[in-house]
Length: 216
Ligand code: AP5
Image (cartoon, rainbow, N blue to C red; front, side):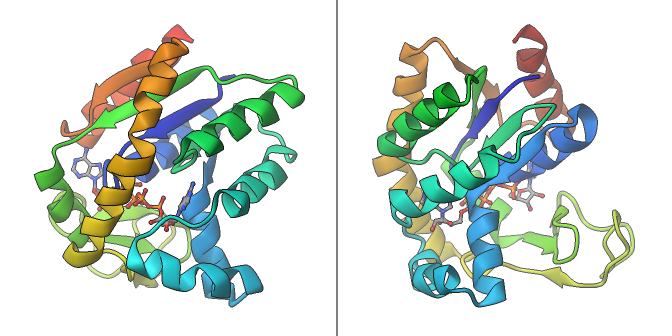
C-alpha cells in the first residue's frame, strides 16, 4: 500500500495515470478537480460557488478542497490513495500532511510529471472524456477505437471541458507556476520527490511511475 501525489501542470497526464493505477494496483484516485466538476454538474451549492472560478482557470480556496479531501480520506483505501491535482498550494500540502498523520498514515512518494509547456496546449485542447466512467481520451494521441463510443464502458456520452481552451490554459498555467510549483522544492526537502518524463508515451510514463512505486 502506498499514498502518492501526482504533481504536474494542467494536461501533464495526472488523471490518465491515476486511472491506470486504480486498475493495476487497486489504489483510489482522489482528484479535487473531478470532485468540483461533479458538484457543478449536480448544481450543488458548492458547484455554484466554484463554477466561475474554475471557468476562469483560477484556484478555488484552500478550505474548500481540504474539506473535500478530508471527507474522502475517512472512507479509506486498501491499495492507498493517489492524490491528483491536490495539494496545489503550500497550505494544502501542510494540511494533507497533518490529515494523514492524524489517521496514522503517511505520504510515500510525490511523482513530478515533467512536461514542456508547448505540449500542454495540444494535450488540453485535444482532450475529451467519458461522461459515464471518466476515461480520458485525446483526438490525436488516444482516440476511441470506435468514433463517439467509450472503449471502457461503451457510453456515447463523450464530453469536452469548459476550461480546456488556450486562453484559460494560460491562467491555469500561471496559477500552477505561482502557487503549485513551490511544492516541488517542498517535497524534495522532505525526501519524497521523484521526477518522470511526462512527454514520453503513456505506457512509458506508466512504467516510470511503476518503478518509483516499486521502491516505496
Ligand atoms: P483539474 O481537473 O485538477 O485539472 P488540471 O490540474 O488542470 O489537470 P488536468 O485534468 O487538466 O490534466 P491531467 O494532468 O489530469 O491530464 P490528463 O491525464 O487528463 O482542476 C481543474 C480546476 O479545478 C482547476 O483549474 C481549479 O480551478 C480547480 N481545482 C482542482 N483542484 C484544486 C485544488 N487542489 N486547489 C484549488 N483549486 C483546485 O491528460 C491530458 C490529455 O493528454 C488527455 O487528452 C490525455 O489523453 C493526453 N495524454 C496524457 N498522457 C499523455 C502522454 N503521455 N502522451 C500523449 N498524450 C497524453
